[in-house]
Amino acid sequence: MHKAKIDQTPLRYDTYGPGYLARGPRTDFGVVVLPPGQDFPNHYHAVTEETFYTLEGRVVMWTNGLRIELGPGDYHRCDPMEMHYLVNEGEVPWRAVFIKAPHNPDDGVVVDWKPGQPLPDIGPKLAEEDQTR
Image 1: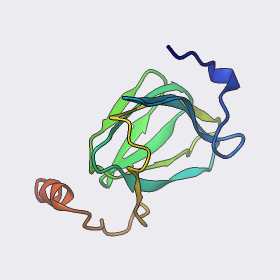
Image 2 (image 1 turned 180 degrees about the vertical axis):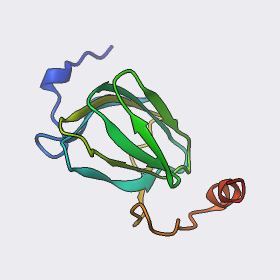
Image 3 (image 1 turned 60 degrees about the horizontal axis):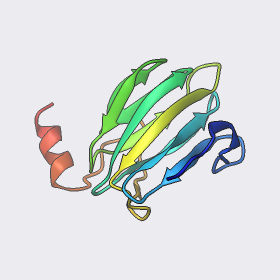
């Protein structure tokens, strides 16, 4: 058994970033906070899917180069090998719950990319999706 409280969960960068309520053994579960004007680097997971459920605020999530806006009550899943970059273009902090499964703390690859740049080739899945656009 494991119990945690969201208001007692430390965030990676003190006042923002991800904060884990549980890490493993099968899933990771936590909260992420992104202040206005802040972004979270573009990255992907090779075998882990990552889902987000927005509690408060709004965020723009670029998934494999596609712009997706998320607000309160919105759910979004990034499958393995789907790059995702988040930026808070709003005026209030964005708070969301995230779930990553399966638990794999070493499964994260940062990819240097910002909106407007050509999409990098990170493997077969991204290349296949690019051909269908």
